[in-house]
Picture 1 (cartoon, helix red, strand yellow):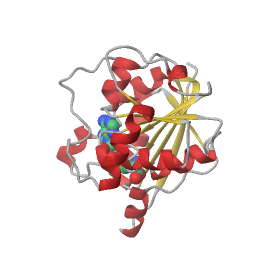
Picture 2 (cartoon, protein in one colour; picture 1 turned 90 degrees about the horizontal axis):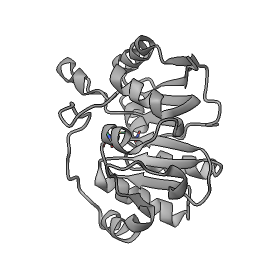
Picture 3 (spheres, helix red, strand yellow; picture 1 turned 90 degrees about the vertical axis):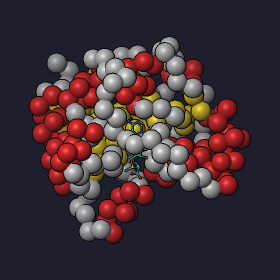
Length: 224
Ligand SMILES: C[S@@+](CC[C@H](N)C(=O)[O-])C[C@H]1O[C@@H](n2cnc3c(N)ncnc32)[C@H](O)[C@@H]1O
């Protein structure tokens, strides 16, 4: 599936407010951990020091959960994609502080990344944790998880690759379940086969404070 530049984006681009530390981290560490997306396919093995399965974290926010996960799983490489630059600065600062070499970062829209720069059968797993829920009905078209996007993910996942989704919005959880079913591309699993424990995220804590129930959904790509 090819989505063109006229597709509806799942985010509103905002400059955001940087702390001094986040801005400095971007300046100091982008060259080491950051990847400039282009029109050419990325060689994922060459991005990391160790050749091991790659997990894509879509919309990592401030990167807190991604850092915890990369520490928990040194046997995996993590590619984080995010459009919010202060969040990227935060992730870079903490990646450097923890001396993690199994994290690399891309600052772009995940739809463009997948369409332009990722080969088929690339990721062992894809994480979409607390994606923007776009709760108003007129904004539902902005939700990231739609059938064409699931088709794109399935193409980029390895055989039996895993899709891990979490949300604190009941209506989005239902939408996700229906959309995944409609796609016919994934089967639901009771839990992840290789992520032992999903770390808590900033948006999860925010949802819990509002009394939202958190729903985790784990899927495996169907073989056919
Ligand atoms: C609600 S936040 C959740 C952040 C984090 N996963 C957490 O749970 O704390 C959603 C994040 O997804 C990012 N995002 C939304 N659409 C995206 C896209 N198409 N490509 C990359 N990042 C995206 C936003 O910038 C935002 O930081």
